[in-house]
Image 1 (cartoon, rainbow, N blue to C red):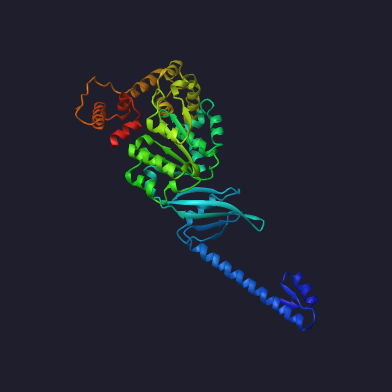
Image 2 (cartoon, rainbow, N blue to C red):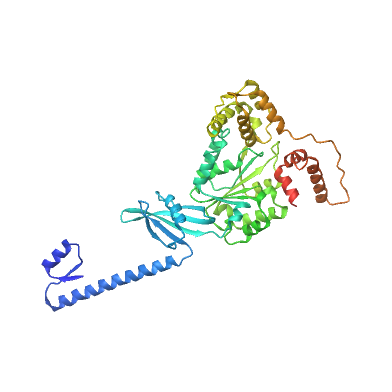
Length: 442
């Protein structure tokens, strides 16, 4: 700090130095020193405040990492060693726009919750990340709960069969209208119709696409995961502004179905998050009672995905599109299918829908060594898909037992007859595989 006369003051300012002008008289000199002391005290307070805020940030549960607009690390509260992978992951995620984003990342076996946004500072934009290890064990991600961000979902969709073949009918137009609201959405369809892909499309186009997509699959859930979901403070149900995709509600027991519906209503989940449901329907389009209850009580919008057999006229186009994609991935040059081979695909019933369609086309291409897939190749592969013939037997359960016990007896008897083939058992019983799974779990 320079206390000086006019000439020195002019020189100091030209050099970019702080200076206080002394005019004349003892009173002026006293005022000048008083200003200097006050300015130094102000700077001292700013330094202490800066140190205090740094200590607060350093001791917070969340760690803070900041990159400048060139991608260089500007500030970090992470320990100096052991976090190189975290830093490199965040560097790739550096945000160029001002929209806040939330995601979950598995980095070297640890699931991290990451919130990021852009802040201006001295005419530059800095990417700020708040990061914390999630309390969700990674094992739970294997048993029914999966975290994805927008990039993960988009990559999965763009590499999928559903991106190649396109959405049926006016589905895209319906999605564009539905995402304008925050109402829950129920996606229905037979197994293999791509309900998960449609849920991903809704998420990536919705207003919460910058936050996480959390998929909860009740068919994969064990008791420990269920306890975490309904009781733990770090449950996805306690977070806000995410997209929750709830699959296979039928797989829950009736008691847990009621508990889940009650939790959704009591915790006001439909207002705090975007809720997506998917339900497997029978070949006649019928839904289970539990799915109907969820639709009615939560005022769900509904999307129904038609089975492949209702799009038979599109099968030649779908097949050619799929073959083009498989040629690239398998490094082959299959030009198409013989007329008879295509006719077999068109007339086949496709109980597994698009999932089965892609799997079998993949198998046909692997087994084909000629420019065109032959009719006998298609016939042989489709015949292998038919369930084995079931000998006609009459199951007579003990009628002195409860209805639940009788149902269990019939399910296990049919499953034994088809040698454990759950798809064949579900088809014979006229129920979905999810419902069969629930019977076996009880």
